[in-house]
Image 1 (cartoon, one colour):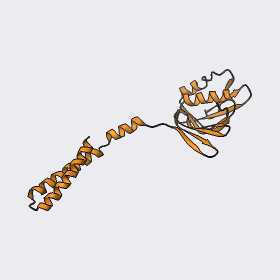
Image 2 (image 1 turned 45 degrees about the vertical axis):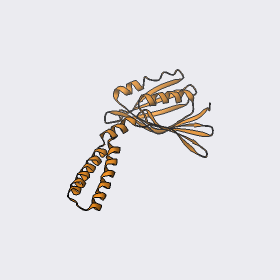
Image 3 (image 1 turned 180 degrees about the vertical axis):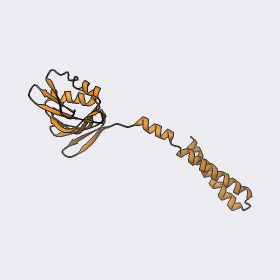
Image 4 (image 1 turned 60 degrees about the vertical axis):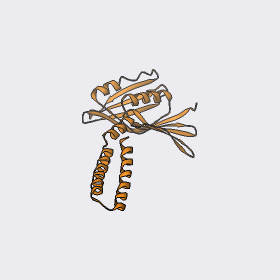
Length: 195
């Protein structure tokens, strides 16, 4: 298995309520990572995570509309700090791009509200889509709500009625044959749509 060299958070953001902020500052369970919280003048907080080796990450949370909002980009190299940040980012529904850097390639994880939406592997020469979350339930609901088929069926039925009325009053044999061809095409299409 490839060893991770670093993890980068790009345009990462967390939005926490007062209760979530309290939970956030008590969520670090790794004995190799210490946590400090600084309360700032404007009511915001700065959470500092520091591992045994002295590496640290500063997470500034500003007060906005009753929430604590943290938006930043940073790079981590130590595994304990990286693991703690990964758990916090997922638990508190972080959004942004997380790049895991390995020797010779990178894995880019696109997070939205704590869930991985897409994973792309980049190497020196190429890239490969590894995973992309599909909104299957939403797609099925949209299809279910769509009434395009019903509208087409109604238009075909209206056309069939008009052709039958025209056929009933037409005495020209060639015109009747042409109308019958159109009716057969409409019938086939109705069969497909109603199936």
